[in-house]
Image 1 (cartoon, rainbow, N blue to C red):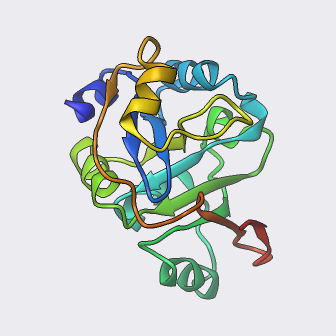
Image 2: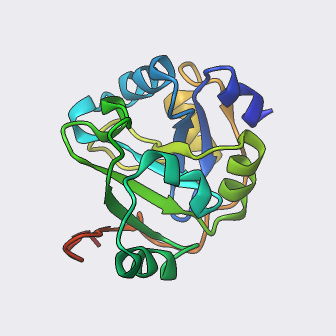
Length: 177
């Protein structure tokens, strides 16, 4: 059901490594615009794409030198998000005001299964109004977003206590820990 909603342009909520996320099809500008409006998030901030495997992310990214690619791939699947130079064709509704795109191959079984069923990476952002605490349960998602999203995919959160670490691939700098 969740994958059908995504393929139809919907916005869904689902469990991730640490919090519930809101997601949609990254190539659908209307779905992404709707997701940003639900969160009250500035489009300039950019978004994260999650995937079941590296192949689902490659169309969105510039090719990288082998040593940098190995550094990134060694951390996956897992709770590390990387800022990677975006492909020239990557839309600004994903990158925001940046030349990079935030990407992660998730180890969470629900996220991986969802990406496999959809057949692509997904936009993934925490289920919250910007700058507020993210939802950590189906009930919290229902209370905050039931009237504005299409579907809530239940499931347990992963074992992380906080949102994923974000690192810049080119510099190695930790942007969020």
